[in-house]
Length: 44
Image (cartoon, rainbow, N blue to C red; front, side, top):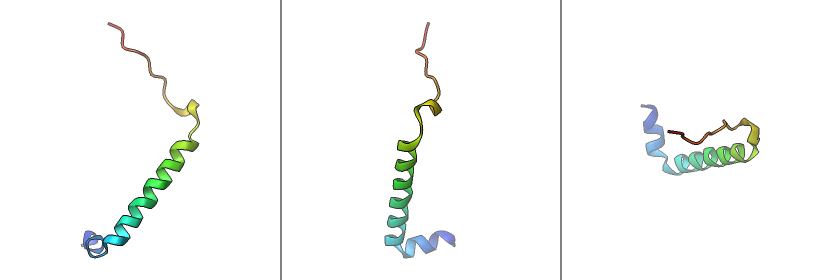
């Protein structure tokens, strides 16, 4: 029933997806490098 709203309004769905993507990109750019986990190479 909730999904019917987005099926009937594809332009709204596309705009909402673009807004979410832009907010995610802005958050990714503003995240300081210190917040990323340390990645160590695999040793066998």
